[in-house]
Length: 113
Image 1 (cartoon, rainbow, N blue to C red):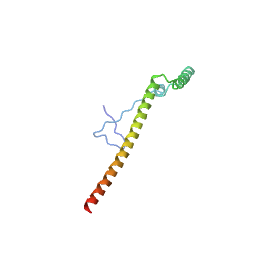
Image 2 (image 1 turned 180 degrees about the horizontal axis):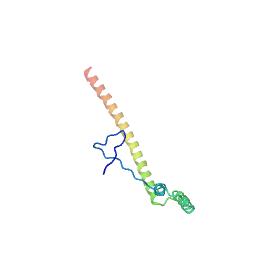
Image 3 (image 1 turned 120 degrees about the vertical axis):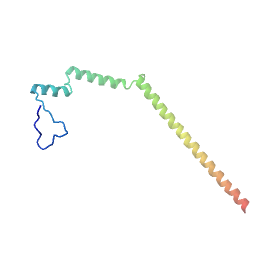
């Protein structure tokens, strides 16, 4: 098989490009296959009802999703409260260490003088 050389490029060591010809109908079929399908009235209605249903369910407290969310919020609040408690303990410990340091310096000064 003989392929004519491409203009402006060397074909040594490179595979030459091949071309195929397709009909307009085949091109149209390919274009339609990659486009999202057109929405029918019944499909639009079904999606609208699904959205409405999901909106209603989102306010119900007894669903699995609501239970998970409640548990997640409880854990976040618990962790935040524990962190505040740790910060309070850290401040108290720092104050205690400061008083002990001052007292040690005072004692050392009285021994020296």
